Length: 631
Image (tube, rainbow, N blue to C red; front, side, top):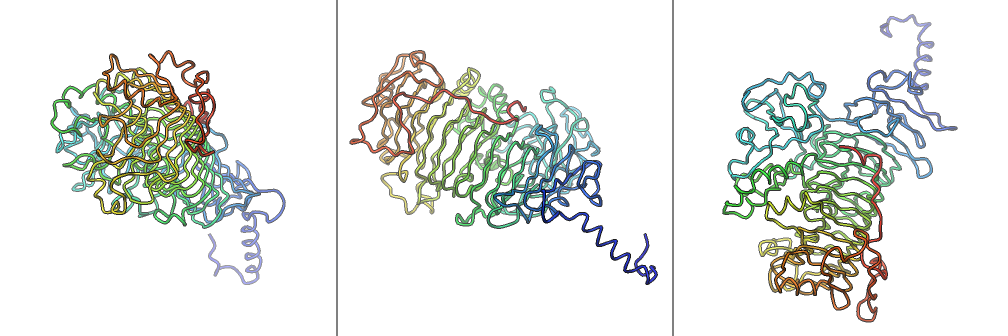
């Protein structure tokens, strides 16, 4: 390369002109048709012009730096080891699109993984053949570790990993996992020896080892470039569409945005604590508005299958334990549930939820949540207003589908298919007034498969379709709850459950958390179909809740007289109790069971809680996008 000082003076103007023309060739045209910028991580170069597949850029970052409103950044097949920052978006009429050339899982992968390990160049060392224990040098504790997209359980220590057990708590773990040894700066892993999930040797697997967690007690405070795979760093309206990307192993979340009017569609999320998070985490007025997430796939696979294996292997042993938390057996990925070791720690918890910190008017529709610990946590909904969650498929979930805490307002959850979820809906605020509400839950179909029913029978544990209330005196006495009335808990403008079809042979309708003597107000259940093993938890009929016009079948064999009383109370004065689930016609999606509509003079029903002349949800099938057959 010639150094500029070596050029003859007569050539300097010509050289400057050539350099200027070269830069102009990469600039987007200011008028005329939008530009398609091509990116190819394997064959591209950022010194090309990016306008054809043959002259593609190498990095997404270079393309988005040049892109103007209306342009498309087209990602060709490949693996992209990048953390992309976007500072300029589109307009409402001309959005900026960043998309894969075709919607297909793993076709375009944006990963935060350690490259040498993911590319099978890591050189894992076997350190214990009997245990199947391997290690590799690593200078940080990773947030997640995947082996061929199988999510390994984080263990608190190397001793715990060696035992596949949380030793201090005598609590079962899972038969694959990882631990980081800070004394020697090594990452240790054990893959399942039976080959259930493929490779037993990490040298034969694509090991996606994530960056470290963020800062702070929850691991949510940004700490470095590996925190997010795409960060939308602009205010106001972004008008950006992310489409068809497989996201993998960021430190905190796949996508972070401080701007609204963002659409994420047709994407897959593996090894992500959250898929999308807001940049402003604690100030509701600054949270981005009008974000849409649709036709995506989010998983912690095999989180639910791991729990099923643990229950089958450990149920008899754990049933003999003295502590109730030892008998739960499905909280290995939950933070803080173990009283001695405190479990895996908050920065590694799986309770963070698909989205963290929804703002105003977010739409989450037609997605597939499969084998996750939790789909929407309290952190998802805490400060949201006007959220719409509909048309989604929630399947094989260890804890909750949607938590409506802590201060969620005007939340609509409808038209979802919920299959094998331990406790689908939670309303358990712990941050004081304003309590969550109004909440509208309608037209959902909730079912259990025989496998799920058998599993929780073996565990001798029952969850409720609805988990409602503040909880024990310890919860009521928290400092944040000091302004809460002590005699009643009320959902502002109501918690409305209407036209849901719930067939849960092992489950119950309501787990009521309030201590005796603390009533409910504003919780209304109308025109639902309910077939359940029991209606309420051991505390009995929750005082203050309203039940009417429900079609109910009690599924417990030879129910005691008290349970018959509960079923009658659930049906309500204008409802009906049926002998078996078979008597509830057209399940799921019963429409033939006609009940008399409520008299508006005795019960004021908002328009947002739709009522029809038939109980239960309309027949439908949730329609997640092209990721439906993934995993």
